[in-house]
Image 1: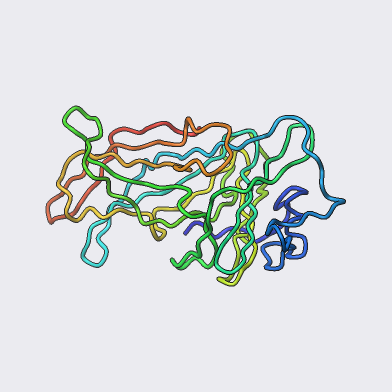
Image 2 (image 1 turned 60 degrees about the vertical axis):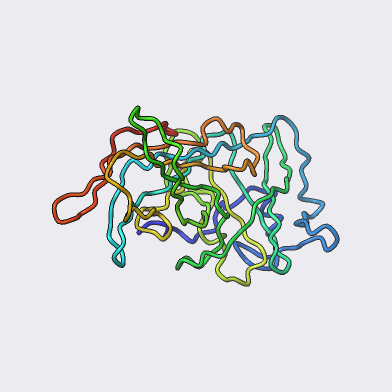
Length: 278
């Protein structure tokens, strides 16, 4: 099963993030926080004023082009993987601190010549609650299904939405010539306990984060759906909460035919695939 990767902290974040998490180490729970502003405190000797142009990430979903069907507790589901790729010029890097139940999340943006800055973003973290003992970026990626009309276009029928709560973002597979050859963002920094008060997550340029179809939340119920043609959408950052180079490629899809074989077995055959990151 995927999402069980290296727990090494080597190369986790660049200089600025390392300063933010200094006292906590890799994924610890005692990051220095400014008591007045609530922002991560960066020691004065580690601050590097940004110079040049911002190197922004671009998060792009891969189409879920391998669908599966399964009967679970008497109900039928279509199962799919969720994959996010960073195709931009910079890493997608988040640092978060918590007071009480409220997380404050910052995105770290590096610049072309030197330096970086922190930008607070309107994101939230949620404890997995699905057997994954770490924190997720809430609904950073979503999936939903609609039937296709006779002309092959999506209908206006009510969407069926997945139940996935979010992503613990880190480098899983290097999928392009861009970016570092070894992972820079690792599983451990997503935290280990509901009591964590600071975590960090990230995705390097040219790397993907993949939630396999076997994992919790990677499914939509189809028990009462009629046989026919459907479209499954995958979207990243639907509410534009993060700084990105572009939102032009944050949506993709697959079309498939839902059927029922002899014996009542539900099937899902992919017929057309939308845009891919690579």
